[in-house]
Image (cartoon, rainbow over all chains, first blue to last red; front, side, top):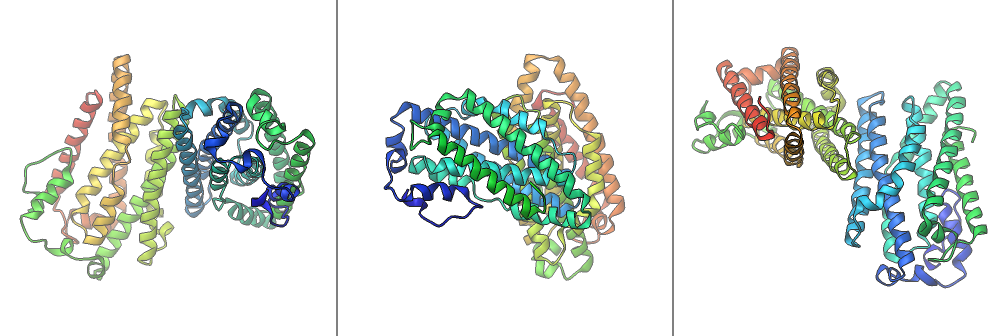
Length: 257
Length: 257
């Protein structure tokens, strides 16, 4: 698609996905705006699901970061996490406002995703400051990669909104710096955090599967049919790209994936 | 003191003060800007204390509201509390930036107030959603009244900043509406919450005394000397006004104070 003709960069798998398609002219939903694309009720339902999941994800991220702020070793660290939490909240506001603007009750759109996201956060409550940082970094990055992959298949209006709220809130470089310093100070910390990151990845995958199994419109959009859909082989490639990016991020943290 | 000669209006003590002031030409620190007023090292130290206390108060309020958001009975309530938390964080940012702008390390200015504020929040952790709402409403209102009283004694620049960050974040009407509805649905709730509010007031007073006893420059500004200071009798009247406003707010909630 025309808007993704830039060279590969493994840290941003969405670009890879786009490259494969770059040779072709934009077709289908990706060439349309919301007014046109939403005439298809199944596409509309899939986007409502996507925005609802993303909105609740931002609200849950706000809560998680605010909670982690309590574990911060210094006031400056606490303020930094509060800043990120606040940024996530403003992303939530944009998504909620868009849902309202297209005539959807935001809480109704979010409800189907509460159980899975709350379940993920409950299963992966960090026991200390470093686990919280790794979780925020790994979790946000994987979610970001996923939404970027999906974004290229969306109508232009929805795509702009989704890419906008995925803007880095400054968390990545903060987390990398703090975690690397902690591992340098005590290398044993690295082993513990590497295990923790694997558990996060496993829990994230299992909760995502739960969501996809429950939401017909959303899964149909992901595996083909609606939008410039994936086929199943493409979904497999998408997960490979996301996993590969995860491995690189773990290395950046100084952890074995 | 000249700025206290008008009739009381317990709900908005600072406005009274400002009204009274309009009748006479401003004198002393209140007529100066920061550049001039801060030449007095004791005034400067008092303002650094005041901004530090206020900044940490906003950061702690952010944490408390984010924590309370977890108790919210609906997604809409959760989003509402997250919005207020985010507003408190932006107030914190303004105060932190001002401290940095006048050459003070913000975390150093906040540190002296961490123990008292954390102590207050630890002693008054709400056990449910309604207690959280009452605490946020009562606590913010009392803090607000206090800072408004102090603000009229500050140089023009500091006064503008302090009054700006005290802007209502929308919490008051939200809390009043929810608490009144809960008491109407079950009048016994009113008795429990009235006890709770008394405990909050008692704990707030005891922690404030601790702060005032510890911080010389700040207390000197409050009881006279620096700035357009109070005398002790005036401090007594200030506490009467704040207590009276508290009683009126309790009545607005449907609670006996």
